Length: 382
Image (cartoon, rainbow, N blue to C red; front, side):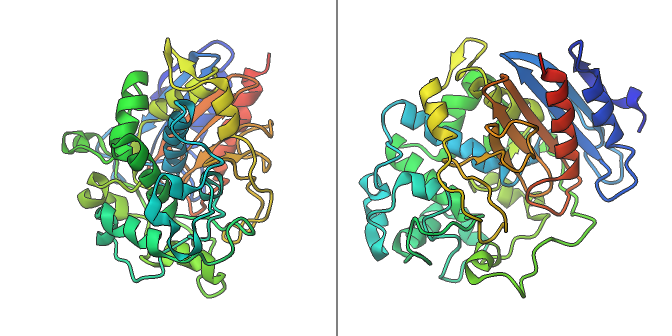
């Protein structure tokens, strides 16, 4: 796809971002784009809003400005931001035990687990012990009751291993207990609709025509079940996660707040754009700077058992020690399986959202995303 087939606009000085974005459509490797979107805010102003390609692998339906796509674990960052809204309102304390808000969670020796430990993958609940089906994910009470009754796989606070799917049910139940609303409803009411951010957890049927199906990676997954530690395997094997699960309507309709968010790149960029701009965008404030600092404060610098590196977990977001979000270590956000991401850098005021339908195999560090961030932050330097 030539550069002139890329749609949208960039502000003066950000022209290299358009070229980098366009180049991903002509790659000669497994990461060649089918369809994608990219949006960037800088100090509250939109400076990049681009899209191109097709919603389908057969290249028959053009990708449009409002194309939605499942963003897998990029959803976790959005869920963490929703919970941070309750912290900002004084309704949740990160240092408090989870059981203060969810009494049943105290079962199995979990009474002392704090909200911070839960959000930084230290709670010892990376997966389900009881056999669990994908259909169980669609019944909120079933999965949250199992997690409430479960005994941690390690002493909470002493290890961290990515809670690939359980993270969303755990954080989402906290949101539900405190707000009285499901995580999807709370996100819509308190963040997405006020910010005019096209981001959803639990997709309405009337939005189905806008969705681009995901296309499975063209390379093998970086994880080998035969060699994974038990706690790491538990995160992805019960039930087994496959790349194209999100192409089913049942998945899209449910609320799986660790992995079934649907978003446009602009929607993600608007949410992270508020955080990069002191908590407000276009006159709408979702939280104050002090809460943003708490959200992004590092809780563990250990190597993550599942991921195999030190992700420097904040309270539901990852810090940028590995450099995937550009040059600044304090930039924070979350990536999704396949390549999508959202991130914010308070120092420069830059926020980015990126979505695509051709998945890469990795959970973090997709080459397209890394390259885009390098170019974006290079253009954003004063």
